[in-house]
Length: 562
Image (spheres, rainbow, N blue to C red):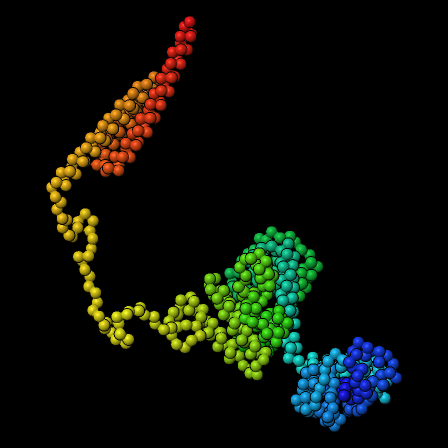
């Protein structure tokens, strides 16, 4: 069995002398404690030396990518016929087996053997000293790192990440400096803050004017486009309530204004640079969401390739991770958008449509990023097409174009009501339509059909029964009225005249009720009899209580008289 070992100086092939020792993996390191014991296990069979640094760099890059280069293939064909080759990388072994038809081996025993060879490398390879191996390793590692940094597709967008970070920092610094100018010069001319709202125009006015007394003699037409604002400024400068400021203070304020103007100019240059880089590296993403939002998405994802690996749902909430995890923790609704919220398409949508448009925009953005990162074309056709489709969908959601669906060339199919009696493609019905039947209507108190006449004997019985029921109801009413009158007479001494009036009202109501009582049925008569029995029992109880009270009063009077 042969062992392939890569060194900074070249490729080495070692012959394994005792393969039985590879079975004891745990004790294999003991065989490489010294150079003499190591020579008993392996010996050098062949060595392929690199001619120069570029040759070593090409071989190293091919080994890192797990593929053998041309020099290694020739070396293995020459020395490995009919042998089993032990390699440190399983992917490299598969590539050698496919291309050269050489059996390769990779396991834990091989890895332990590689560690032993690395420990005794200078002793096993004659002519390769430690003083030579160190500089070779360092130079090859530097060359390899420089090559990967220069040609790595993930490092091309590093400039975009740095530029958008610097742009955000410049915005913060500009805001801080501008507010400092306003606060500092506000002690001298406080009215100017409300008259001139823009920070850059404010700095230019302060730099030109200096002391507020000079405002009357200056022309601000180049700075202020509106003549009314200029007139307000000059009027406010005459009647200002600010304090007087020395020339040294004005000099420092003007220097701060110079810093604000210089930073604003540099920010404009940086923004132009960012636009050009975004249109070069990610044209479809730029056409879809704009330069600033696209650059922030790339910076948040780490690189364009990393961002291309993310699904549309992740891109939709990218930048709102804190709100997402808080919503999941508190079991509330998750956020609908993150950094993508600042795209112009979402800004155009109504509040109720922002969620739908953000979801559609995130899906299209994921496709555009993947095409920019992994595609060969350098145009922005996909981004422009996706933007047109999203604008169409937005118009459909807002009701501006109802006859066409978003992203489709054909209109929506017309939905017709189902009629079972209509033939396919025919205008007429198979059966005749049903006509309206007025005889089926029902009118209250007027029936369309004549009621059958009842026999005379049945009607006479009915009238006799109704008369008896009315007599019983009247007798019951008279008895109840007499009882209530007795109660009222007993309570006349205790009640006020107001109560008499109330009693009179009650009598009137009862007389009306007795007059308006309808004809009751047999069931109603039974219910009224039950109520009558209950009222009789209650009245008897009340009378016994009242008689008992009267007896007690009489006894008390007799006792007092005695």
